[in-house]
Length: 150
Image (cartoon, rainbow, N blue to C red; front, side):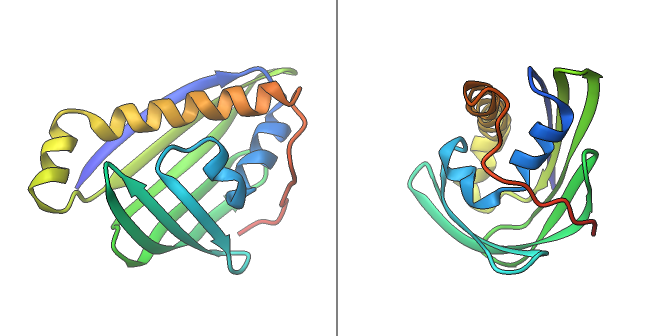
């Protein structure tokens, strides 16, 4: 199992950053390789991805969700084995630090080589950068929110 940890500061209040992150179906707007996410229930999402020409579909379960603090998940079926957590840290009224930790299991020689070359780390870094641009370009106005706790 491999692990990536990345963080970024976004210039929006913590509740705006958190609220946007709960809008899983919007992830394709800022996550490279994510073609589609369907929110099937409060705790179940279905992902369709394509990275470096390799398509994957899997279900992920939200295992923990605390408003303005954290969202944790784990894949439960399909092609990808991964788990992760994203946490939201108050810096000041208009700045939030987002920290993401992803544990994943590369499959086959191509993914293992890509992992060793840091492809996933660069992908996560880029996705966080695009999330920052996405939420900041909206003036901190999120596309929706889900404030439930799991």
